Amino acid sequence: MIIGVVGTGVMGRGIAQLFVQSGHEVRLFDAEAGAAEAAYAAIMAMLERLAAKGSITAAALDAARPRLLVCASLPDLAGCAVVVEAIIEALAPKQALFADLEPIIGEAAILASNTSSLTVSAIAARCAVPGRVAGLHFFNPVPLMKIAEIIPGLRTDPAVIETLRALIAGTGHQAVTAADQPGFLINHAGRGLYGEGFRLVEENVSDFAGIDRIMRDGSGFRMGPFELMDLTGLDVSAKVMQSIFDQFQQEPRYRPSALTAPRLAAGLFGRKTGEGFYKYEDGLKVEPGEQRPPEAPPGITVFVQEGARRDELAARLVRAGASITHDSAAADIILLMPWGEDITTAALRLRLNPARCAGVDPLMQWERRLALMLSPATTPFAANAAHALLAADGSKVTVIADSPGFVTQRIIAMIVNIGCEIAQRGIARAAEIDPAIQLGLGYPAGPLALGDRIGPARIVQILETIQHITGDLRYRPSLWLRRRAMLGLSLLHEGQPR
Ligand SMILES: NC(=O)c1ccc[n+]([C@@H]2O[C@H](COP(=O)([O-])OP(=O)(O)OC[C@H]3O[C@@H](n4cnc5c(N)ncnc54)[C@H](O)[C@@H]3O)[C@@H](O)[C@H]2O)c1
Image (spheres, rainbow, N blue to C red):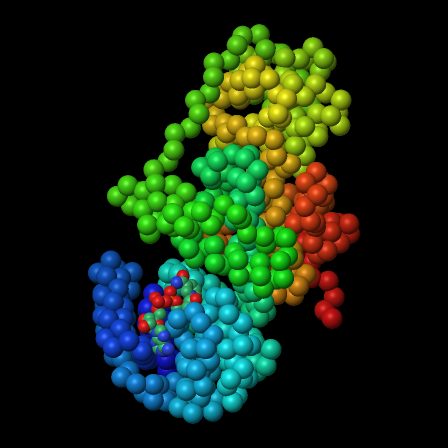
């Protein structure tokens, strides 16, 4: 196939490299003089590096050379079956480009836009044949991020979507069809981690590094929300947050944070400016030091509240030298493992003395890290003793302030809920949501599988409890989630086609 790539910046180069490597002829065009030539040189240098490393064969490199061409003007794209635009992210230039291309390309040729935030239907609106226009959204760096979203505009011919899906499948990337809705599938799904991360810091539950450590160590995420935003750049992430919130008509689930504006004003964008949520030295993140655990006072007696991991927690405490009592009134410390509750609410519900109560998040992978949660009434003695006992065997412990659902329950429940909402809105088929999100966002599992693993009913319980305690509608469970939890069905269950 002959494929045109217009706009040969970061994304255009990656897209061109992917298609050339997959055996297509690729024609590069950029409005800025010399830009397409620079892209050509960069792509060739990249392919040569891959050949030198043995990632591609010398024969593949030789075959690729004549397939990549630089175009001096738009009419040179005349023979293309598909033209992908990756120009500036603004509606008018994209509409103008497609209108200019229409008389040049053949009747059956496809116009694809790599837009991340504009409406595909709007980009198509000024074309004579809007049916030939679709979104084809890649992620940076294109050759390594093995996923592309294919977005039909409201007037896109279904055959165009089939052709683009086959084209993407031929590159070895995964194709996912997503509706022409704000953030499509993957950027929409990303709201859970970022949005709830910010909410936790706004509530002073922990600091940025504390939240990241809990998500990384305790939940198996490759990176926490703030490390990730430092990588993407807060300048980019903040715009996406605001745009998705506005496009969804101020839906509270996507509410951005007041913490971003001062950071943007101060130029704390992340790695690209040398400082964001973290400082960077020689390109490496400086990890802030962690609180050292206190020494455990001897002879501590602990009451551990009933729960699925009660015996496991009690055994840890005994190994650390504590004794377990079944009389809460006789205990120095009372440890709770609530779902969706904060320690204040749980202690009062259970008629336990809040001054002696602390919580341990039952959702976390304790072999890597524990979160110890304190109520405002927890005494320093109880807090220190609990911290010392949990850390006695060298385990990492993050102490957090009272939060309904700790850190992981809140963030994961939001990720699951937004994944369910994507399914409920029909933005993508349930079966395609998880693989796309795993590839696009690097999560340990997709949101629907994560929800199934924890249990849909438990996710509903967490969300409803947080909603009850905070009064915030952002936590209301998606209908997709609520119904499947009530019916005992998997979150991947589509139901009957309409
Ligand atoms: N950078 C990302 O991570 C990312 C990810 C997904 C999608 N996108 C989208 O991809 C598109 C390109 O982003 P980028 O980061 O590669 O930008 P970029 O600034 O690196 O490159 C844009 C290129 O387009 C050229 N250009 C601008 N207007 C043009 C026109 N009218 N005709 C021809 N060429 C023109 C510029 O000269 C430049 O070379 C945007 O729509 C962006 O939203 C970016």
